[in-house]
Length: 193
Image: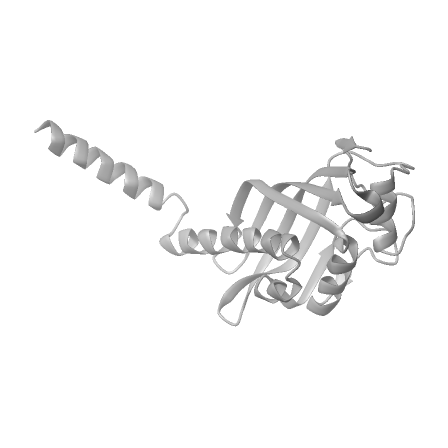
């Protein structure tokens, strides 16, 4: 009797958890979106920029907090190019944590995902580390039967004003802006040589 009651409770609990989003379809979409958010980080960390075609729409718009003229990056190819240039020469490790997927309706999901990204210097920057904390805010669209990011905005939690740490200067140089400020890029920790 006790095991039947426990089984019934577990069944109802599982049913409640599985149907937390308003519909089963939204639950399925939620899982797909979370997988794509993780796949984006894997693409960056493995330097497999072709993999971004599974995450970003062909006409995606990325806003990575860069100063003009690179404020908005249009199209998959241009996003791949800018992302590659910004982390080329670094070992990176991007961790996604808190993630929320919400629905205007079943054809218009949005997501917010917090991240911590570490940039480990190589070559003349060996031993230097830049850690940044921020969030991605994405709107999603169906493309080829798969959910992909249509618009991505990256914002950081603390401003970097006039920092000239070697690792930061190198990161800025890689995106073609030299030492200075990358939008609202944040340094939360820095380990020098």
